[in-house]
Length: 433
Image (cartoon, rainbow, N blue to C red; front, side):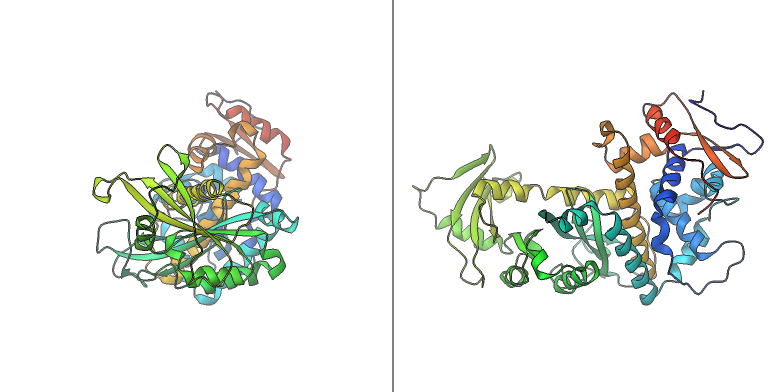
């Protein structure tokens, strides 16, 4: 049974993604696919333009397909989504792969420029920064397993089996608003500290962040970025920095030097903190706190020690540890990008094709986050996995006519009423983008 049928005629098409179809009407209103406008690829247009293939790829990512080949059995066969996009059908896996293979360094940077321009207009984190509010930005790097034949595939740090060829991808993330601000692909043997300065300078240039504004940004990084030189460089560029020290051995040695009569401050039942002296090799004023955490691995001993270094003022040791612990948000985001949006499983031999795919995944993430914010607050707690599987994947039908289309939604699903109310608020839209 359907919640509502706005129009019922011989143009009606069923869809497994009535929720996604509803989202696409909002995406059109907000002009969120305009980030593709200035990308020119050396491809002939027979039935489909390169732009339409890029749109179909983003729709496929937002539908939750893990591999590009899965598009053949999902969005490619979905007549309802095709009607919303103004086409007979969406591009299949072979066409999308061919399109990604046409990307080169210049077109990837054009794509990045379009992503940045869209983020400038829509990002809540950047709006907060322009209003003078403090913003916490996380930076991290993760591995993408791939074939040894892929460009940039090297043996390096990996969460998979040791010796697996990988590429690395680094992310810049605003955790409060769950927005990805940038993403970069690297060869597999790249250490996270190697591209840090280039990425930070690129971030400043692209988003136009002057030194005065950097004081409102807190960069929160893990031990991979936490060398004394990196911390000094970031602080001198005007940022607030909260970093875990690079050397775990230094933290352990410092813990051994603590006098027995010093009292550790409790953060939680398995974590304690102690303020220590400044590190002499860090060339800026800062405070350092030693953190001991109850070990989950017997081989590591009862406690594991780490050192937090920051130039944040008016923050006590406990507050600093709690602020750093919130960094798990980017680790959760990495898992969503790799598993829910499928970047880990969508592998391209071409390095620039994979870099473009990473940027398309970034925009799919942000569009879904922004779409979720127009839904009732009762669903704002949902992660991307539940948003895709419980809201966007509600089945229904699309009724098309000369001037536009309407979405009819099945009623027996938990979130059908939410989509129904949203559909009623939206105006009838012309077919296509």
